[in-house]
Length: 564
Image (cartoon, rainbow, N blue to C red; front, side, top):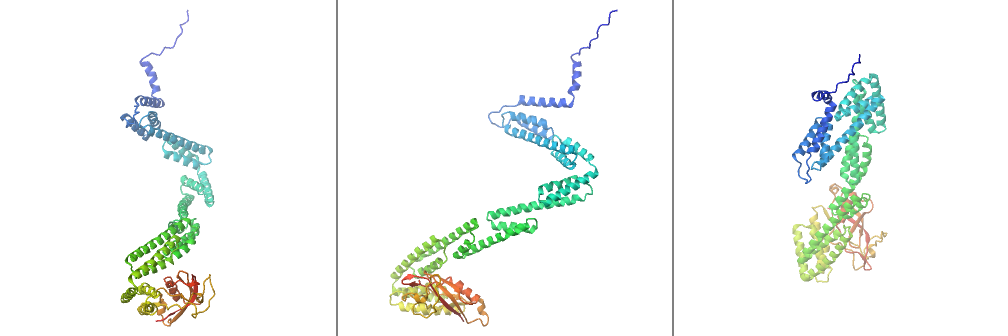
């Protein structure tokens, strides 16, 4: 009997039998996901519009962008990236934005993967469960591709750490944190204390301490930032800002408090100098301002700024004097010219800027010519009559300032001339005007100084020469020293006290070649009376002292008797 024929496996049938075999494979999730990505990519490429003209995105492009954003929000990160990649490849108006999105997604994927690998390594070593937990917690919060994996691994770390190991680990972190904190390595200390907080062990006594250290470090960081800002203000020479910030650092009593106190001394010194210079500039005491500025040269910005302010103020005051001079010159007003001359002389004694001082000299020469011209026009008698009229007007108004300067100078000019009224004018200068001022100032608390007695053949003590100054006996006989105007000094408040008056004060007077007066203390002088004389001397002026026909500096003692 012949053997049975061989049995061959049946061939698969086409049609529904093939579909029945393929469908279960296609229903698998990984296959479906791959098909979906492939379809999306094919559609993106097929439907991608070309827009080389640079116009606005098409409706399809906007729809693809919206789909990419929605896929990302729905955590379908890969599908979202596929759409962005399609947009990035096409040369459309959204290409640049799509490229940025693709780069951003790739960076997120790279950062998350690196963090996940680090967490896995920590978990594998079984030495730093807390660090692994913190890393997995960060991954969960990132909410990206490994979010679910991180959740599972986090639970695994919690089950793998025994209670004793956790407490031991917590103590280790605390000890390391304290060590780093004491070494002022706050960055490492912060990581250790942060690990304790992340462990979150129930009933832990170290967690509150770790949180306290973290709070201190946050405060220290704020103090350091404030201190650094203050130091930058010092560098910029913004002294008021630096002072306020250092004061705040000191007030907080943090680690930087001691350093802030050290810096405050130099800041306050700078502020004091700035205030002194600005006060001197404001009151027109330019020489005092210059002296203060010389001590501030270590602060370049401050020195340059204040020097510019001083020169600007000097120029402004000179411009005002020059304007006044032009006004009285145009009117031919001899009294007005003399008043401007007095103002100019006072300014010359205070100015520091060489260019302004040179302009003052030029203006002084011009005023002298203007006065001579005005006086010639008016005539000797007319000048004397005008001076007398000005004297009466000032007397009626009780204007001692006008009497002592403008009116006195009018008569002085006439007395120095060769006219027939020179003797009468000299009598006004020496007697009439001083007596009137004395009468007016009796109730106003002012004292009129006596006439100077300084010249050859006049009684006076011999004093040693200082800085090239001559004595009164060395002056030329034809030009004895005289006051310009009527010098006055205020009574100090202590003069009202019983027994204080009369009081005789002797001072040492130095008259410079231009007639400016300086006062120095002589012997044991009362400080209140001396201060009033010192302040008043800034407004005094004399004729130019000369020896052998040349301007010189003369020095002599002067006794001023205060009495009612």
